[in-house]
Image (cartoon, rainbow, N blue to C red; front, side, top):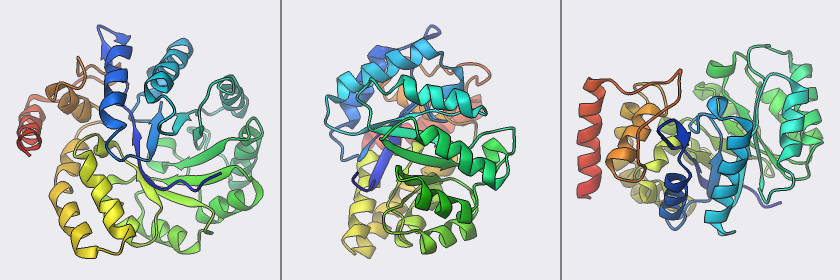
Length: 294
């Protein structure tokens, strides 16, 4: 298994008149796959995975695989608070040509550390493909401690990466300091991307990279080549937009921008998500205008 490095895009799930818009989804893939991304992640937080029915999920993954045509790796988000259900979910994708799975910590149950280890061991046993452990405590109610991450990396061979979205800079820096070379730490905290890379992160899974995609890639490549001034200059050009994209519930602002850019047919989200406020829409229109002028 190759180490995961670079910018991975957690694709939005476009909707049109309430249905998954596979046409817009494939158009998105066609737009992004030549921009230097390291791969795609489907059915994550940004993809509104809790609202996508099982049959829709399979159709969505199949459409993306068809559009990618083997040019980039594709990872599928599989999560839940029942270990049995997550394990069967992974098994259900094994007939498809995906590269691995993004597995979030079990939410709501608040399991102890040994329960988290056993959960990931059980679901990883369903596949020989790469598992990305996803730690996002402000959504799940449980924090995957760095000690537990390192235990998983040592005892579960196909856990090859962690998506670190703790929002805790000290925890993230400690993980980057202690992680073995074979474990890719991918930040999920978009505002901390530059900081994470500078401290040894392998890359990121970044919703905001739907916009100014090539600049995110530039930052990554510049730091990898020890071109600090270039990386800093590129980062300063895109970092101010990130708080705006997360000022209301993700992915509502992002989908609004993609709709305004003509990349998807509709800014629709599924309930309980709704739409951006009128005030934010005006700010996003300005952002889209600046991006279009570049």
